Image (cartoon, rainbow, N blue to C red; front, side, top):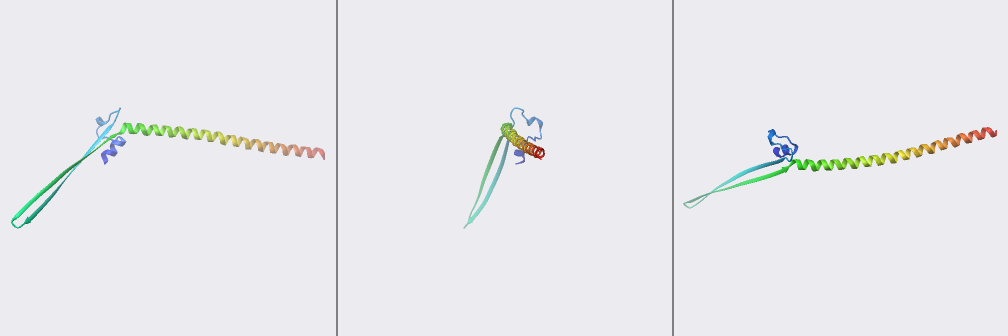
Amino acid sequence: MAAIINALFGTHSEPEQIDTNQSIAQQTATGSECLHTSAVADDVQVKSIISSETQATATIHTKLNIDALLAQLSTTHTQVDHYSQTRTAAINEQVNSSIYEFCFFLLSILIGTKIDRSCS
């Protein structure tokens, strides 16, 4: 398991294991099991040994996996950037509209006050 994690994240114990174009990590695990049985009936004794051997191989293309993940990250970054620019423009437009309305309201109050003073 540690070899798979090392292969995924590029931590190799030997520098010549790293290929800059395409890193392929291959880990092979082997296991064996023996089952001994013995049976005695009357004067006959039978012994049997059953052995099995298993082998599992995993190949991981780390360079290809990293390239695919970086492409997805780049796409996500572009989407977030586009959303933030669009949202910032919408917020700026709303703020400018509110400021314009407030200034218009203040100007109308000032004009009304000036008219009231001139009439009295």
